[in-house]
Amino acid sequence: MQKVLITGASSGIGAALYSQYISQGFNVIACGRNQQKLEELTQAHVKGTGLVFDVTQQQQVVEATRDIDELDILILNAGDCKYIDDAKHFDASLFKHNIETNLISVGYLLESLLPKLKHGGQLVLVSSSATIVPFPRAEGYGASKAGMDYLAKSLTIDLKPHNIDVSLVHPGFVKTPLTDKNDFSMPFLIDAEQAAQAIFAGVSKRKRYIHFPKRLTLLLKMFSLLPFAWWSKMISRTTR
Ligand SMILES: NC(=O)c1ccc[n+]([C@@H]2O[C@H](COP(=O)([O-])OP(=O)(O)OC[C@H]3O[C@@H](n4cnc5c(N)ncnc54)[C@H](OP(=O)(O)O)[C@@H]3O)[C@@H](O)[C@H]2O)c1
Image (cartoon, rainbow, N blue to C red):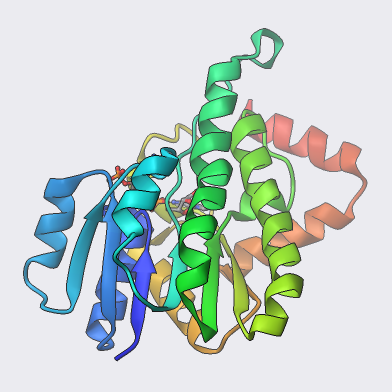
């Protein structure tokens, strides 16, 4: 019986991933801070367990994960996005929140959980397609996810001798509580179940790079090849 641990499983993409893995017969450890949501999610499944901790608190990570023995798949998906609305009056606390929640926490989780990942196991890091080109107000969120992209690529090299494959995930816009607060149009928006299916399929094929919806990610990759001034002018005009 394969065992998968998913952070950020109390909501959105993580909750949909939990259901996807449960439906495929996996043992699933669902993590988050919201105990009630985790209980609602896991109580109907004997193969589902909830683990409550804050990923930004290393001591909580250590204590909550101490009794886990072995894992086949580790999916680091927990994250948050706080926009920096006024770059001229830069809010360092918002910047710090993004970096701590989306990047520093990953270091805590790797320290506690990588030793438990089996030879032949898989590490999945959920970043964002926002790293393909820079978006306005995303100085904190984008920087945290760009850091995760680099981390995933370095880990791919260093974990190869341990026979651990790393998958970097670039979701486009997915309808979740995280994006429900966005006040701009989100092209090619998909739902969390579609996102979970794409991640599950990519992880099952041990893909190094999982990105969706392809219409959006390929378009962004095309924009990234254009001179930066073009992108800068275009994105400023469309988001003003
Ligand atoms: N939705 C999109 O369009 C989109 C696009 C690109 C990338 N992503 C990435 O996909 C991931 C999931 O996002 P989502 O859209 O599904 O968001 P969501 O519905 O807001 O879910 C975020 C999850 O992260 C957990 N979380 C946040 N801060 C945490 C903390 N300090 N400690 C423990 N858990 C924490 C939340 O759990 P609790 O509240 O229970 O703590 C929740 O389960 C994120 O990494 C996000 O950056 C999303």
